[in-house]
Length: 351
Length: 220
Ligand SMILES: Nc1ncnc2c1ncn2[C@@H]1O[C@H](COP(=O)(O)OP(=O)(O)OP(=O)(O)O)[C@@H](O)[C@H]1O
Ligand SMILES: [Mg+2]
Image (cartoon, rainbow over all chains, first blue to last red):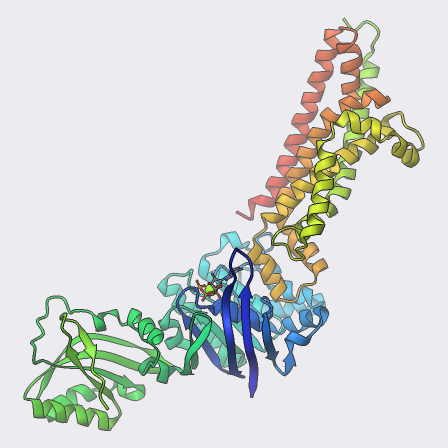
């Protein structure tokens, strides 16, 4: 079921001396139950796109439909009502500093005039969900960044939203806390089935939790699709650059390792069960060849494990190529790399 | 030294000052706070930004603030008479004191609201807060320490303003200091009343600081 439909959205910021086109005729469909990532470099228009969904930014042109209601056509009162079912979390949490954890989570319930007894029970449940029991009476100033984001998540979920909008929700957190917040989001997604739209500039966030992704550049969506497809076979230059940031070592040199001009290098990607199987070693043994791992990542992609490696193969050309064919046959992605002029590696485009 | 002045008069004057300052501070807050909220909401970057309206409000506030208090005191006599029924005495002094201090407090309130994290305001809007909910559930609680310090500053300023209200028979310590100390060269009276006013300022400042600290402490 289609939950969010952005139809021909153009957003122009008029402030300042010359207008900035932050969104340029963007059309986007997000299905109910999805975790949808929006990625792009700074200034691409990601936040503007996200804030258009709950109309914090009113588009200059275009329609916004959420859960069957055209928000852009609603009068103010009804828009306020509709917003109660759209949760939002932010990079800098935006908690009320004068209110306790409990009061912060209760805040949206109070706005929706939920009776206080019912609200109290709801707050208890929510704090349990985000793992903050015992922190009811704390003030935000007494919490760590990760805990503040948990409070913000509980607050955003208070009114049973149909969608949770996340704007760089982990960008102010350290890697470990980022992981715990991402785990929490996935956990919430499993338990509540709430649709999530996740804006980030970090590919790792997309690969760890998103199912679908849109890549943005200069106010346009330049590429979108399933996370596995986009991340493993990026088509746009931006997506490639964003991926390059994650796999920086891939395009660079391998310090202290001498790559011979006739080296048989490849990039190998193993997805799903394959990622945890000893398939590389088995295939190498069968074909009487060996390999050196020059770089590697093991991570989760679109909810599946995957590993991504750069390998230098040793052995005669025929055997190595037979090994590569065998790997492709069992489902691995194998792409030859060649040594570019400057001593850097490039993906060789092969069929 | 205190030729024709009794301790009773000084006690009376102290009470008058307290009375005037307390009531006019309350009046200034009651009028100034909504004005401050209005300035904030329609001001630059405000939730209901409205440049022409803001500029009109702003100019009115600035005009009242720049008129010397002594002139305001006299200019307002007709209005005072209409509200209080008389243009002399302690109660009559409260009207110009409120009018003079309300725009002052409004500016302080506006500044306090501007210091509220705009992200929090935005978060509340994203949750569907109406403008009234925004005012009562976000702006007022979040700006509370600043609003309290602002009320303290206003009260302290009003102590010195109230001294000028002697012109219309406002009474109070400041009046005593001017009439006896300044006009009749009774240095003793002047020193004593001034000292009492200093004590009053100190007490108010202390109370205000404690109150602001009470609310701000847990927020840091
Ligand atoms: N309030 C504003 N007034 C004027 N221009 C703005 C405003 N907000 C954003 N912009 C401009 O619109 C463009 C898109 O901004 P946006 O914040 O959506 O980008 P972003 O992709 O979220 O970037 P970042 O990763 O830095 O958060 C940028 O060029 C930015 O300068
Ligand atoms: Mg942004």
